[in-house]
Every structure is written in C-alpha cells, then in structure tokens.
Length: 355
Image 1 (cartoon, rainbow, N blue to C red):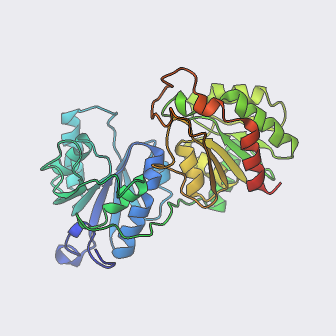
Image 2: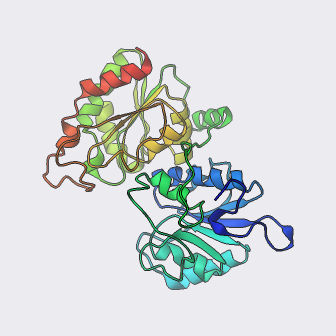
Image 3: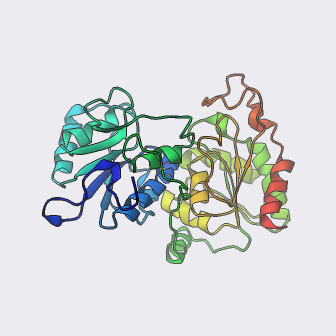
C-alpha cells in the first residue's frame, strides 16, 4: 500500500464522513506492546484522522498510555488461556456500541480474535494464526524469513495482505515528560540523583532470562564506586532479587522493585544515564525512551526481539545451547548468562557512560 492509502485494504473514511475508528487488540506482554508502536504511528501517518483505541490487559495499559497514537484504552480482563465465553459476549456487546470499522489483532491466538468477531467489527485484520478462518477476514500469511523481527510482523498489518512491508520501520517510541518524571519522584519521596544508573534484574518470562544476582551486585558495587548511584527497578516478584543485590552493595544502591507502578518505572528509567537489563519488558521501555542501555541475552534471541534503539548494546555469549527459548535452563546451569562476566558488562557500561 502506498502512503495515503487505506490500512489493511479497507476503504477510507466511514459513513457520513466521520473519522474511522479502529480497535487494537494489544499483546499481553509489555515488550510486545511497545514493539507495536511503529504500527500505530504508520497507521496514523497514513490516516491522520484515524482514531485508534486499544483493548489491553491492565498491566500493559501504562505503556500504551505513553503512545500519543492511542486515544482510549479498554481493559481486556481475561487471563491467559481463559475462555469465559459469557464474559466475552458481554464485553463484545459493549465494544459493539463504539462503532469500530476495523480491528487489528496483534496476538495470533484464537481467543484474541473472538471479541472483535462477536462485536461485529466489519474488518478484522491479522495473521491467520491458529484456526482463525472466519474470525479474521483480512488475513495476512506470516513469512518468518521475510519478517524475522516482531516489530516487522506488527508493522505488516498496516499493509494490504500479500504486499511487501514498507521500510524502514522506525524504532518504537514512548513518552515521558519532565512533569511526569517530577511527579514520580515526588510520589516516591525521591530526589533526582546525578549520573543515575538503573538496573533491571527481573524477567517475567522465567529464570533462564535472568543474569545472576551476584553478577548484578558486583556490577552495582563498581558503578557506585565510580560515582553512579544505582536504582533497582522491577515488579514485586523481583523484590527478593533486588534485596539480595542491595545487601551486597551497601551504599547508594536503592531497591525499588515492587515499590513503583509501571508508569513510575517508565519515568524513573527516563531519568537514567544508563540502564542495564535482562531481556524483559523494561529493556524495551529503556529502548523506547532512547536511553543508553546494556541488554543481556541468554536463553532468548536479539534476532527476534532486540532493544530497538541506536543507544542499545546487546551482550550475549552465543553458546551452542542458546537460544533455547525456555523459561528454565534445560541443563540446570544457565551458562549462557552465568558465564557472561561482570567485567565484560562493566566495560560496555563504561563505554556508554563515557567514563
């Protein structure tokens, strides 16, 4: 499709000349939602009057709220694997009242396609996915070789099925204003430090994606010695890990894991001179904020979901057993991360920090 055409091959405009309204069925992972932002930007660039709303899990809403392309966000209340047909019918009735002309189905699951279908949205755009014939009526066929990156696969949905994706695809971007940053600091009772380094030691997917606690602690100690206060960010599940790192770093290391909401974490990351993180949602947050970032990969692959920023440095050992894409190491050693020494990560940090 040429710029100025209609996304997904749909006719431009809507009856009566009112703006077209489209529903985004958002992914359930923070990083995936961020990687969808170039799709939203492309749709809006081609149709400036297009109104994009999102249906998203509550934990994904904060990153979508930092995308100016998104007008409104409705909560998708269903847990992974939950069918709950009665509740889906009820939600579909509510969505039907909004008059959407099209829906973009970012997840490839059968369940993600049900609500737009039940809501009677005329054009339902997505990859064929798992047995979605009929539910998806503007169907793309995924060519993993032609589209190796997730960000490319999402952006493909802006094109007519069968048409080559328009390149280049810009990097994902989310916003954090000085006012939002100041509000986050005030709410948390913090003052903005100079030369702040943020460490993100968690990874929601599983332990096979987490650099060892002792490695994070060793890195934190040296960074503090060099005059860089360290803040640890993550979810409540990451608090014990953060406590362990902070216990080994007695000065200028503050564990904020579980103490912030996601919006506040976004704003604190925006203040950082450098972010060091596992392959996680917060890695994609740092990249989308264009903060200098050191991304540590073990069981997963930067060839599929890299941090999309010129400010990012990816470190990995590329062992024969990785990437395995497992939640836990099949061999019980997690050598792909355990053997990634703190000294190597420190060198990358100092290169980004210029000191």
